[in-house]
Image (cartoon, rainbow, N blue to C red; front, side, top):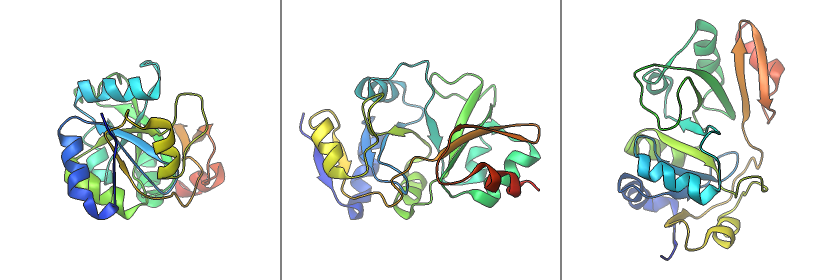
Length: 199
């Protein structure tokens, strides 16, 4: 299997690959991502396989709006306020998943991210939600350019979108416990900025 390198203007081709159950890689405002259609279990299995990641470790659900996120999760008022004030942005918030929302390998909680990237937001409007993880082998350094992704994943990923990430730092991952912010991974957005969003 060869890997196709496409430009962002080829967004309809990227959409088709995803809807056909394939894994693709694209730049975001943080780091490069590996993505699969969220409800395609076979595609998600392949994503975990390419990444070399254990299925017990959750990956992020990327959506294009707070309204879309609310189809999958039950948000507290503070969680909703944070999302409305800081998203799109470089944060991933871990929230309670609705019991009847199907997301492969995610049972109780889900990390939600709305990227601040025009191309990715447009893609999400075309495909619906995607399960996305950073484009690197599990435990390795994050990748921020299509050249790096091609060097690592040539013939493993069917399609890579050409580009380079501007931020080069993964999103801040956190959850709320009452009014307390529990940070799992610190990125560009600080704990203080998150706290200020709910004041």
